Length: 528
Image 1 (cartoon, rainbow, N blue to C red):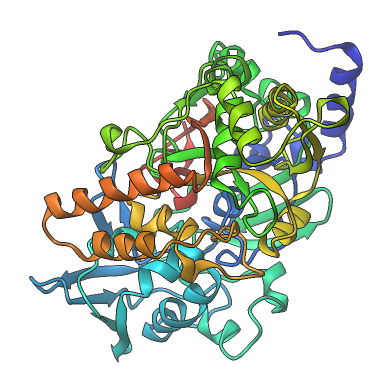
Image 2: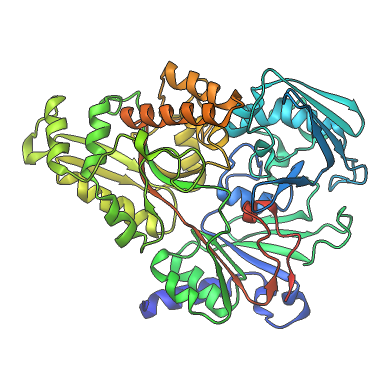
């Protein structure tokens, strides 16, 4: 696909405005510095508070987790050098590394784990809140030993300690403060391979090498620049010119994926986000009429050709989503699902049934869809298609553009009719799926939770039973019933299962080391 001359000139002008290191291609400084991109700036760098992909991509280099997971999702030591669990699954003991220091020089100890997992993460992170709700007590046995005693067995407990779900935060900085307003949200301190150095608003975030990192052979690079590159044309030029080393997930528009794959200087990975298990969705605010009516949500689903979304909007990357659990992950049960094929006549009939008759101009109802910020890429194209499809059944949609801080604030405060987003399972439905449907996770001011206000006591009970069951057949039984109830209720509008791509310059190696991808940081990256 060719871009017009004005777009290319604009992209070139943007690249000329980046820090001097980006101009010095071939110099030692450039060779040992990673250049990455941001479609938009995050509101802050408090990892648990807004645990989205851009936060994971940046803060995964700063904060670390107790465990790392391999491609088979088996746990391996990280900040915890060893761990054991009792046969009944009621106690987990973690033995921490004694040679780890926070970036400000303070020793990392059991206090940090107790604070993070017992206080900060449950308050701020919706995935952590559900996981740690199964924990009775967290005890610092000694300076470098932490014990988790469970209320009942929780079969996804170890997976809940993945870096993208449970980053360990510094107690000496956050304990006793307002987590949302702590000044360190803008200059974070971690234990990871890279340290925060500088944030120039509107331009870049700079991380530098942690010279005291506990893995003696890491990091392999001297620093990382994350620079704002707001349009898909700019990001394409940055990768093709070599000014950028990484293009993560939504950085490259799917319309030019084939062009990137054909570039001999670029390596593409389709497995970098396997740990996420991601579904593109639209969420409705059930507090506002008519979105709380199941018939309206069903009509919405019937009105949209989701095959068209996959093939024409996302250029074949992914597949139609049929429910809350991706089809390629454990516990998916196609037989349990209530499905909503593309059928605009059925959509009109459902709207008629609930009293939404066509008025002047054939319009039945007007509402707004808040779009996820993507600089005019496939998210924007998808929303424009949805707007057109809904107009054919009499629904008049206004599309609202936002930046990330606004999107986060409005969605967390329930200030929307409908929004679009993309959510992951993170290895198990108890971690990544339950958070959107549990009534206990309806928490105003906290994004990435049950912002729709969906409330079903049977669903609450089923998620609990599935999470604490030991027998695989019993776990499957509960998740099969959950899939039936949630799709019957159209608890969320599931559009398609995503397969985000990760591109990187061939000058680098050891970039993606496991299914958690960029969220595990880039400490292992080195020159090829």
